Image (cartoon, rainbow over all chains, first blue to last red; front, side, top):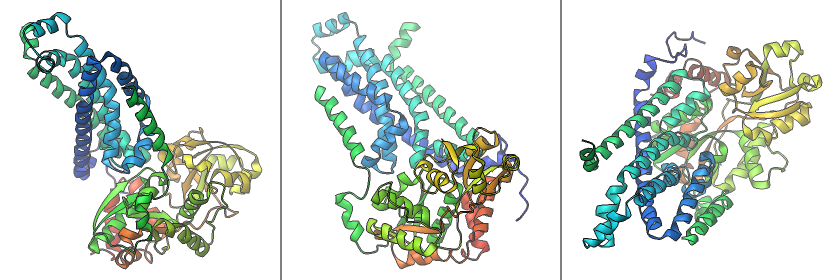
Length: 226
Length: 313
């Protein structure tokens, strides 16, 4: 047996330059996979949540079941969720995305619905008085006014998706989670710390990005404040 | 909308119902002739040795002209069905452990075990179980990675323990750090109780030979840890192996298992077979050390080894 090399990897230091330089490509791939899984699932979640929320707003009877089902989905532990979806999706990125979409639903539906419900009755009546049909009312009055609440939900859903992606490591599609799990098994300090820090950075960056988007698409809120 | 809730609930129930064996629509693959897919997915069970073997398989297959990708999956319960369905094409396995696992899957958890310390008998049993599932078990090599049980050196000294029989005779209460599947595996908790008379009070599901598991024993939260004969980090945690004097552990030789319809060709068998005459248990332990203690990349360690042995250009 040859002597162990003496570098920060062998010494298992928390912060290790050699880790960054030898694993650059692996880290990059993991970050890309993490971003893809997060963004795809949040976008699909949004595409499903929006019509559900509008539906729940239009028909009061639908609100109970919609909120009930999405909330029950949210209470399923993530490991159990992936196991339940496994026969449907097999070992694929689709499995992780499907799980994350189901989790994002409750946050998104609740917040979009809250936003829609907060539109003042007078505003709606005024629009109708001006001759707005239901579609135009929804698109040009109700949805824009619901934006702040909806965006708050989207931000929470995105940040929680960033952290939930890591659980996908049990099927090999967990972005940075793959590295965190592998690092935990071998008590690899630099790997666990680096991957965790990157995870937090992604979450913060996504949140700031969405905040910026909200600022851009709600100019009236700025005008009111200024 | 009430209908929707019912549909979702029914869907969740249906999901739990079907989780084993190839489904009807891909039964055909089981009986199909050996296939030769150009792109092969190599599965790793997520622990270091499995990563290393998967890397070596991938590099040997690359050299034989295949494109490969690696997929790391947490455990056999997840990757074996994927191997049957062809989502994973090649997996490094352990003969006796897989034979017993497939046996339990086919004949139920209470079926008498088929894996034994006898390699020939184990391989025969394994092939009989794997073939109907569309899997081909390639010939075993020299490397053997048996389960092994370790305690702290101080604990062994204090209670005069050298073998697992000593531990059974000592009547000590033992909490075992192992994978959660240990509760069912005949060569883990049931075997320790029956063959050695060890008083296992519980399984601490920290995984097989993981750092957490070894630290739990080192810190006295658990008394014994399930690890393997190729574990090179035991002395780092002050642990010693207890000898398996009644031969509870089986012929866990490293064998490549492939999905026959996608990787059943002679070319794959030839590429992976080159490793058989070369790789020894000590080599595996040494490579495990390089990855676990020195934190080298499994891909680099595997490549260096294959090049040193002249298996890779």
